[in-house]
Amino acid sequence: NGGPTKTIALQSTSPAIDQGNRFGATTDQRGESRPHDFPDIANATGGDGSDIGAFEVQLSPELSIDDSTVTEGDGGTSEAVFTVRLTKPSAQTVTVDFATTGGTASAGSDYQATGGMLTFAPRVTSQEVRVTINDDVVDESDETFFVILRNAANATVSDAQGIGTITDDDPPPDTMPPSVSCSASPNKLRTSANNHKLVTITTSVSVTDSGS
Image 1 (cartoon, rainbow, N blue to C red):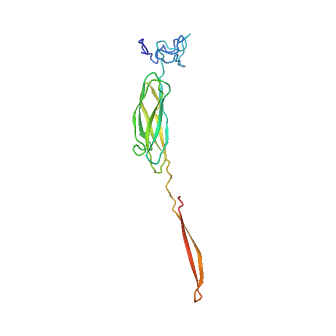
Image 2: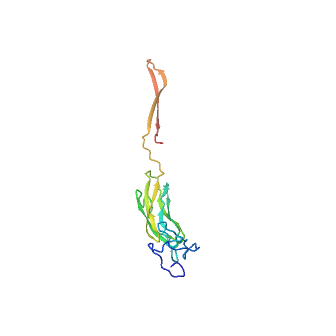
Image 3: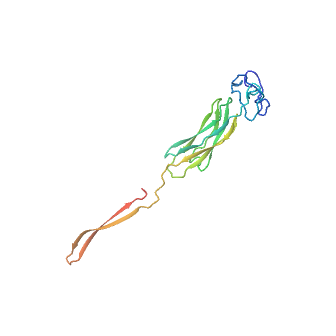
């Protein structure tokens, strides 16, 4: 029912689809644009692609989720933000469940697992999922986890998986041992009572940390 007059919704296979004329009306009884002309359905002779009835059959909007990349900090937490989008506004409330799942990143140590339901009020086309990232000072490879969409109502899901990438910003540890260099130079030359030459040698040692 799209308005004050009780009507029966057309099914997606109804022969009334694209067989009418809007006669100047730009919206149907629910406020959806009219006509909604399906290109693979031939229009009736003299028609404009409008459906016969109180409202137009509309394809369900599609849900998708973006990927997210966040640089890991050195302490505390960061946040990865995933945007969930509808391909078009809907006259109905759209809901979809979401949940995180691990990849090379582990829940608890690398990120905090989360889940729930997103609700799109009529005409709203985007919502956000926020995932808390645990920062550290350990050098490691970039890691990934996922946010999965499921159980959509009043919409279909075209892209159910958002990829979260945690980019490591910690420097690698020192791996080269320090180098040691020695030098020696004569400091003093003197002659003893029995004419033996005595040479005093001064040595110096320098240590260089090649990892710095």
